[in-house]
Length: 236
Ligand code: ATP
Image 1: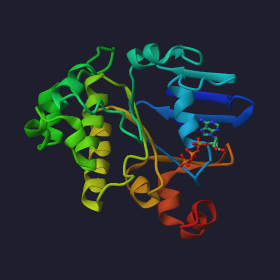
Image 2 (image 1 turned 90 degrees about the vertical axis):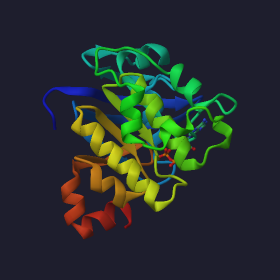
Image 3 (image 1 turned 180 degrees about the vertical axis):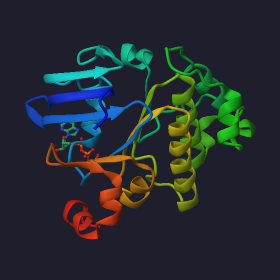
Image 4 (image 1 turned 90 degrees about the horizontal axis):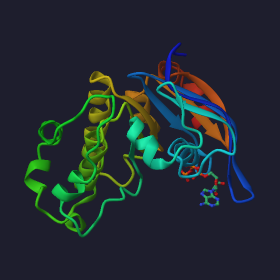
């Protein structure tokens, strides 16, 4: 467990109306660390991301990012503080061009600023898509736009919600390589994944959730090596 966490979630409870979705959830992400959040459907992984982002604020407990409390901050303030988001449904404006979608995402924070040119270095195809309308893009192309958009917001931490969902295996590999690249550049990552194998390849540490609680926390290496543990916790 990192001593100086960039993100620390302490004992949060989160509700949708009267329905409690998270129960006493705690989680940490250190600066430049890649953390995977795994578990079955309905475990509360997306709700954890929504709580961090202020989309469904926690009703109890506390969330701190980069030394400041964000538990009840607005989504806008949280983004400006340096939390980037790659949503599972991408949330790209379909009738706007790639260039326009990227331009409106540009933000400054105290973290590293990324340029469009650097995004083109990561995703070589992106440069040639800039004037296309987003509704005409493939799933893999959309994912490039969604990740680039997060980077242009100068994040210290990027939250990925099932980035490999619906993508071809080759594109999944590209996404995982991008996560490794972000880590090399000092950007921390919290990634929710159904694709356990891919997540374990890139993660430093892992949390497993079930029924709204954290049921396991540990180094990714332990789950990579220990097939019995993996089977017990993740069923694979
Ligand atoms: P998945 O992989 O299916 O997205 P998850 O681990 O991300 O699973 P969540 O989406 O966080 O799980 O869901 C946690 C619980 O909250 C589930 O019981 C789900 O039915 C419930 N839930 C999620 N979104 C809402 C909502 N908008 N309104 C009411 N309940 C919701």
